[in-house]
Length: 121
Image (cartoon, rainbow, N blue to C red; front, side, top):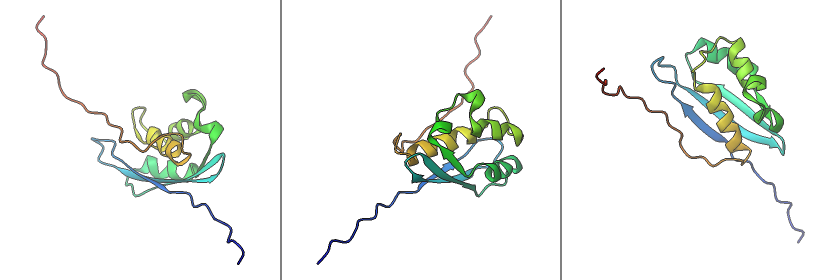
């Protein structure tokens, strides 16, 4: 009996990103299309800017993934769509793509804020 060829399925990475006070979390799904490309789907958000960004970003190449901030297509598209400079969604998109490319492990990332006690002058 001949051996069946093995098909290697790529895992889809699912991320929920909650940017905080704006109240517009979103989901990001990514999976490896080939050795140098990740397909990305951004959805489930009420944010108009992120909805626009979702229309512009549907794949990320390995080269784009590691482009410097000022030339990174995800950040450039976020700027074109009117995203706030401190929005964490573009970083979440890139981190999700890294995990899908198997270049990072799926470990939670976190930013926590608190008001520190004021110091006396």
